[in-house]
Image 1 (cartoon, rainbow, N blue to C red):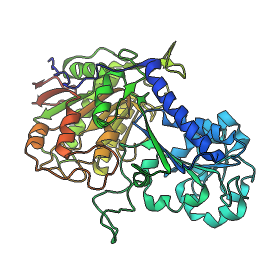
Image 2 (image 1 turned 30 degrees about the horizontal axis):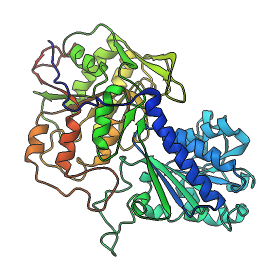
Image 3 (image 1 turned 180 degrees about the vertical axis):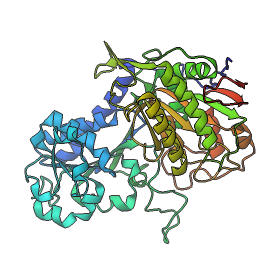
Length: 508
C-alpha cells in the first residue's frame, strides 16, 4: 500500500543557511567575548553573561572559544568549567584538552566516576580523582556542580587566589546552564566573580516548576533554572541569543522555530538537500513511512487498530509496530550522508556517509519515550533487532527523553507524549520534554502516536502557561502543542493485521 502524508502547514521559507546562518552565531560570540574581556579587565560591571541557545546551536564550540579567550588574558589566572552531569563535561574536557594541551586542562572526577571516564577523554585531558592532584597553576579545571558545591573547603585550601581577590577562579563557565536549579547554583558562586552560562533554554527544567517546595515568597522558586533570576533588567547581567542551529536538516527548521517563536530570528547552517537518507529496497507501508522521514521533514504517523495499551504512555503494541518498521529498514539497508562544513559554515566539498556497522560518532537511530516502562519495552525491541541484524549501540539505542537530553543521533523515532492521553497534565505537556524529543536528530524524525491528538487538543481545558517565567515559550499548553504539530508532515494508518513478515496489511 501507499500512504500519503499531508505536508506541514508551517515551513521555514525565509531562512539563511551556510555561512550566512553561521555568521549570526559568530557575531553573538564576538559580542560575548567583548563583554567577558571587559568584565575581566574591570572596565565593565557585568558579573553574569548568559548565552541562550536553541538545541543544536553549537554552544559547546562557543563555550570553548570563550574559555580560550579568558585564559589568554593577564587578568585571568584560572577558570572553572562545570555542568550538572558528568557526561556533559566529558566532550568539553576532551575538546579543550585538544585545543589547549592536555597539561592545561584537568577534569576532576569523583573516585566513583573516575573508572567510567572514557579513554578518549583521558587521552586528551588530564583526569584526576582528587583536588590535590591538580597543579595550582593549571588554567582550566572542570568538575560537576555537585563536586564544587560539596568540596568548597578543599577548593579554598588547595588553590591560591585568582587574579580577582579572594576567589579561586576568575571565571565560572556553566554548561547547560538552564538545567541547573538555583539552589545548586548558589552553592558554587563562591568560585569566581564572573559567571558565564551557556545552554538551551528549551530543555527540561531542573524540577517540575509547578511543584514549588518553597514556603516563602510564592513568586520565588529556588528549584527554577538559575539564569531566569537574572534575565530582564538586571544591570549586572548581559544576555544574548544564538540565532543559528547546526544540528537539524534545513527541512526541520520549521519545527525548531515552533519551539522558539519569540526569538527575533532562527536559521539553520544546513541547507535543504545537504543531508540525505538513502534507503534500500522497501515496499508497502514501510516504504511510505521511511520515504517521508528521508525527506528530512518531521513526520508524524497516527496508528489505529492496534490492541489496547497497558496505559496511555506504556504502549507495547505501538512499540511493536515501530519494531516492525525498523526491522524492514535494517533489512533493506540505509545510509546517512551529510555535507561537511568549515568552521564558518561554508560547505567544504566533503561528505560523511554512515551506515549500520560503520561505528558512527552518534547513534544512527534512537528510540525515545517518556516513561521508564515504555523505554524498557523499546529496549527489548532494540535487543531483538540487534540480534537479528547484528547491531551495536552505535547503530541503535533506546532511552528516556530525560536521559537523552544533550545527545545527538541520526534518526529519532519517538512516541508522542500525548499518545492515548485523555487530558493534558504537567508531565505529558512539559514543554522541555517535547523539545528534547524533537531536537535530537540530524537527519530524520518519526513521531508515532495513537489517533486523537487533534481532538484532545481541541477539547482539553485551558491550563496556565508560564506562571514563574521559566525558560521556553509555553503559552497555553494546547496552543503550544498545536503550533508544534503544524510543523509535521502527517499521516494516519489503520492496522488490520501485523504479521511478523511485514506491515503491508494496513489501510489509510
